Length: 294
Image (cartoon, rainbow, N blue to C red; front, side):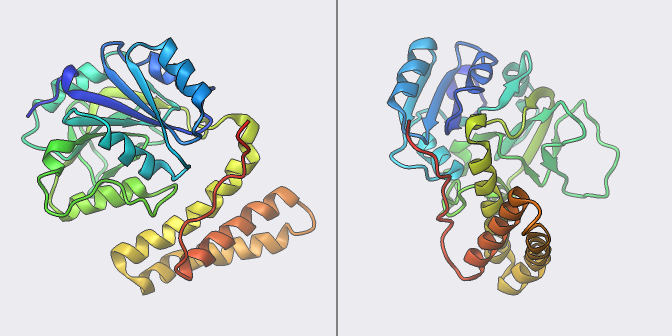
C-alpha cells in the first residue's frame, strides 16, 4: 500500500513544548491529520492546541513515560497505515510531505523512511557502510538508522512481522529510535532517507527553556542509561561494559575535577555516573525531570 495524505497521521510527543510546537504544526499542511501526545498531562495545553488547529487532536498521557511510550500511545490511537513521527522542535520545509509521498513510490518496500536534515553538518541518519563518502542526494538511499525526531513508519508492513513491537518503552530518552531501526535491520526491512524531502531540527528546544537545567540533568542521566541498556540488549553484557565504561570513567573524573569549582558541570557528570550505575545494576530508567505541574 502506498502513502497518501489521507492515509497518514503525524504524531508529535510533547512535554512542556508550548514554545516550539506551533512552528512545527504550522509547517504541516492543514489537511494532514496530526495527533499530539502530551506527556505533561496538561488539560490547558490540550484545549489550546485543539482550538487553534482544526487538523490537530491531542491526547493526554497519565504520566511522563518518555518518547518511546508516547509514540506507542499515539500509534495505538490512529487509524492510518502510516505514522509520521516528529519532535515538536522540527520544522518541515515546503512540500516535504508531498515529496515523501512521491519519492516513496520509487521504493519496492520499506519499514521506515525519513526526510533529510537541511544542516549537512548534523546528518539525521547512519549509513550502512560508514566508509561510503559519495552519496547521491537526489535519490532515496538506504541507511542503517534514522534519528527519532523524524521517521515515517509503515505500520501496515511492520504489523505483518511476527512478534514485532514498535518502540521499546524501557527507553525513556535516547536510542529508542536506534533500537527500532536495529530490530528492523535484523528483519531485513529497508530504511531510507528521502533527500527531496527536507526538515530543520532546532535541537534541544523541545522543552520550555524555563526548565533547561532540570531537563539537561535528566538528559545526561538517560544518555548513559540508554547507552548501556541498548548495548546490553543487542550485543550482551560484556560488550555493554566495554562500550560504556570509558564514558563512565570519563564522567567520574570530570565530576571530581569540577566538584569544588563548577557546580553545574559537577552535577551534569554526576548524573551521567548515576545513569550508568543504575543501568549496570539492572534498574529501570526511573529518573524523571523534577518539574511541577503549574
